[in-house]
Length: 603
Image (cartoon, rainbow, N blue to C red; front, side):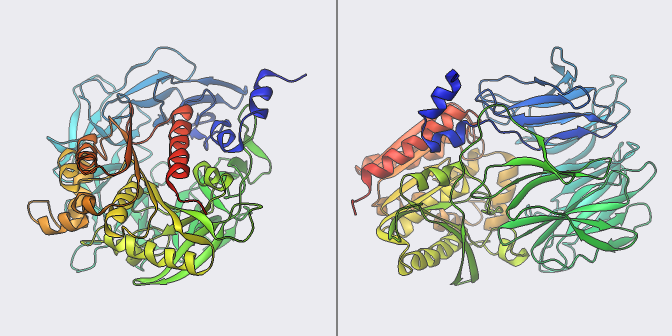
């Protein structure tokens, strides 16, 4: 007998199945109650938070909101589930909490007004540390005591900052801050909960090259004052152990190329190393006493999250471009299997290395299956960030283009992570233009190699990728046949005026000042400057509640397109910087497919 869902799935195209197939994210477990976990899933068609009692096997949906919920945390004792409540994706709101066993939501931070979140740390004694970011106050970090007294300010600064971690005994607070004015490279400060400074670590002092630091967590052992930190002193992200009581620093000898992150094993004796290089990642166990590095057995592809359990096993989420994501354990088997059907696989990626104006560029290329050797209509799908990277990981959007006979190329341009600090930091002052130079070099390879049809090239991306799409259509008007920009920066000056405060700090770092201080740089990097040169039909999708790429600056750009009769379509949806609703995402991808197929010239 065939169920209704089987009938629906049978008649559904593969590209839609990949979006609709139920997924689960890597579970987060309570430190003092490891059988209690939360995870995010799209099982209902909207990404929401779920509770999972591993001892009984029971699961329940915690949140249920029209535009979804993904930002959640568990208290160390596993009694409370915290989640961030904003309005329709605007990222501006407050924390609420709900009992793990179920029950009504209640305000988790009474006395604090709505804000953009800047980190959260939940103590074992009922104390909570909450980071807030607002246009009026910059960053403030508040301590809420269990006795119900008014929230106290432990930290305040105009520049962006973030709650790093709270020590196991709840007496020390690590803060990542950018008081030196460089939002791309944080310094660290450890405070008592009344705001007194205990220790400082700042790699930006005394040099012309800015180096960043990031907190990876206090040691999970009572009375241990060691803080695990990531540094860039040798040109990439690497771990070190910093004893905030003595000031001693121990840089760990982990000789791996690319970026290296880490987290503590629960007993504090070892580190779980996450190594990212050339669009792939892998896991290692680093024994702190023996100084030995042991590779854990994971398949080739991308580990998008991992955590060490109290029994020494490691749970991790893995996928590749060809295989959908799954949560596995080094003990063997699948940790958490979502209900329903599994997403169809897709096409493996090919690694491409191209000589560019700033060094070798790594790109990932995919060819549509069963379509011959090409040349193909080709989508250049540009990642956001900009400090992010495309990897050998499963992604439904590229797979949809492949199903429709397109090749897909993804470029890890300068600004991308995983290739060293200099590569990531290279795009200052000539923002957008540098990334497009790298994309142009890979585009030339794609055409010369016979992969891409030069008359049928699509430039596409979301967020920073959407920004680069609009900028590329204006600065390289003869190169692209169609443009698809989702939640883009379109008018950089008004985007700066309207965006959330943390992104203002990032833009000041990237450009070297505000639009008033360096107007020529903002003008050179703004898609609006080149809008009258755009020749290709362009499709723009925008969230009306987006605090990162606000709607007003997109409307300004669209008005300029309309004024000269340029071919364009605009879709505005009632959410923020993207959607957590599966049907909404499918709707947008379908619009992009239809737009490209309508406007691309025939072979």
